[in-house]
Length: 306
Image (cartoon, rainbow, N blue to C red; front, side, top):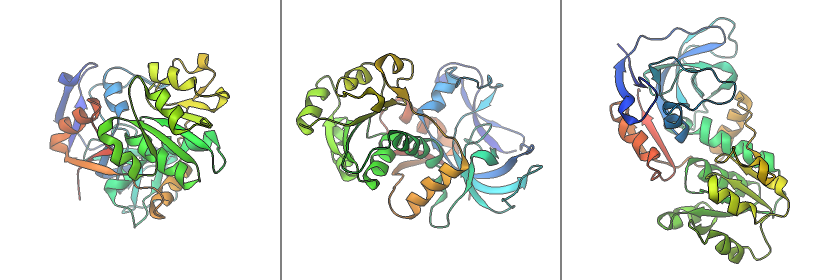
């Protein structure tokens, strides 16, 4: 039987298990996909802990982990057009991506360009698309200065590159160990820590025009003080407090069209997903612990089939 990495109840890592699972059948508007790679993201362990987006139904247990996947279409559901069996695709799975088979809704599924590997494609639907949505939301003109907090993680790495592709200067906070990495993708590195605001002011004496926060909490509150126009404050990490600071959460589009645009940035050499480590499905526990511990640099991907 096909394998899947699941959580059996809401809680910590002790709820996770590699299990046998029936091959799913696609419903209307869905694709059955043989998974080649699945991206690992903080939202994965947050959902295991019980998190659900507003309006999102509570998941039935056991639930497969993972929110982005790439693979090959095996079967097509009723009413699907524009896809065929054998197509290479990537997107946001309806029931988890850490599995040998998953279901992708066509509304959030795109064709994988031939020049992009399955591994890189699997790193795009969450981190790449979130980064793209945020940069588009800020709509900064070329020459502007953007502060990205958490620039060394999956979303931060993508957001830095996308902003640079649009001609925006980037200052990125990250741990001291990520300095060379952050600078290699075109940002001015500022060490994360209690003095980061002073360091940002020193790096940008004329101020910053916008903040893309990926940390939340005290970091978001401190970063907000750098702005005179709080409408240019967005966050993917502090949605609970950003409103009172005058900013807004990242407005996620979650469409196939956005996935296409992000994939073309990769194909054109403007965006490198920076998959820094890969793990087989049998070692999914290690991949998720690396992300959950906050020590990942770039993107972590589970490679499954092929």
